[in-house]
Image (cartoon, rainbow, N blue to C red; front, side, top):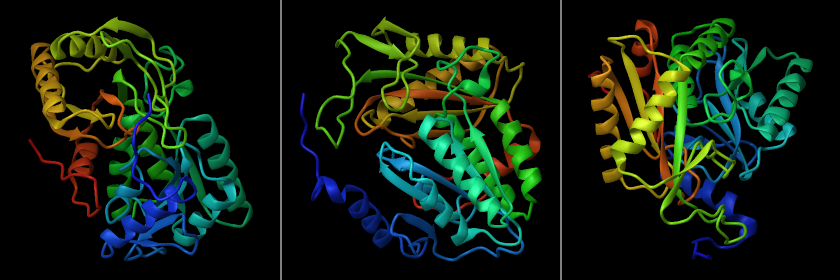
Length: 338
């Protein structure tokens, strides 16, 4: 199956997207010295605030460049479609934002991201910068319980983005930011459901094959294998499968709280995502767990792939306050207190 896509040329997909993004939000974001680096338009005080940044492949928007701004990322280094940026480009991004207070380099756990991110952080340290890499992972389908550090990064990493972004604004030092990020990571679990494939903008072909009456449980953001294929069921039936697996992997004691993130894969309507959230809220309540301050929408996408993921996060009071803290970015939503 081939699909029409809007672009000028394959060679300019990334640069045209970034130029359009910066032109649309000039009060919030700006280009760095390298055209693949997106920065806050108004830089933070580098002597007081530790920088927070990430390098990642594009094609998953709005993550991560859509989250650059006050209260979240200081920079995003944008790689090619579905490919991590090279270490020297990530180092350029670090040098744009790091100062006396140091920096935390977020790394979503995928092989290229890990290799290039760790190399860039090591290069930065060799140049005298205080840069701490922080691996992010949450996808329970990608490694069994007890091997959490082998898991892939998925939509639940957004809890780390937001909470560390808010904490950095308070002047929290880098060592405490890393410890906080590790604790948020330990409290987060994600599982996804793929319903139909997206189309690669590079090849024009489907990223995977799936019969019309089946779904994949646990497929990764690039079409990586999940844990099971199942017949397509109702929203409630799918949520029951996903919630059962998440809470078996990490129990949330009654009465919670639990923060729920419903992430659309790119081709799932808001009508569908809200239906999924309603089922999650109802089924959690049936287990005696109160859902608070949810986030519902398409934030970490794979082009027009149809599907969703559910992320559960058990916050303490400080984390919940930071999750709800104000931010000014183009695409991260306002988090409400209820």
